[in-house]
Amino acid sequence: APDWPAFEAWLKSLRLTAGEKLLRVKGLVGVPGRDGPVVIQGVHHVLHPPVALERWPDADTRSRLVLITRGLDPAPWRAGWDALTAERETALARH
Image 1: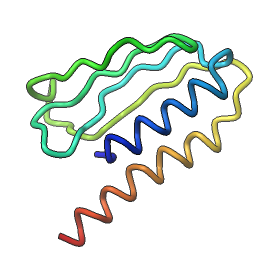
Image 2 (image 1 turned 90 degrees about the vertical axis):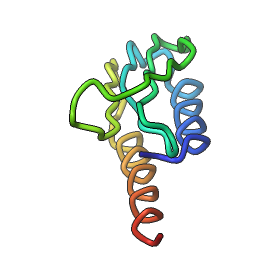
Image 3 (image 1 turned 45 degrees about the vertical axis):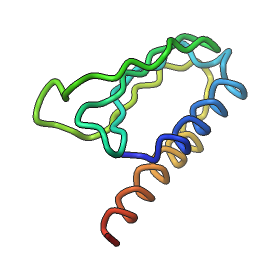
Image 4 (image 1 turned 30 degrees about the horizontal axis):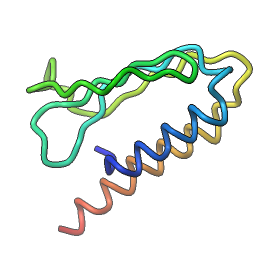
């Protein structure tokens, strides 16, 4: 699960720099210290307020995000997502 403030910063950057190319964003994001994920949903520049679920819908507790885009190079955003999730996994391995 990514660090929540780092995830919010990444998502804000995506929204502000690529909002017109971001047709839809949706996903489940794990938050350290919570039993369930946070639901993320949005269209273009508009994101709905995150909704915290009490538990994951199934046994897969990995954070996952779907971006539906038009004309957006996914490579830098994927790299940012991978860095967010890798940093958290590395931090957990150290404890």
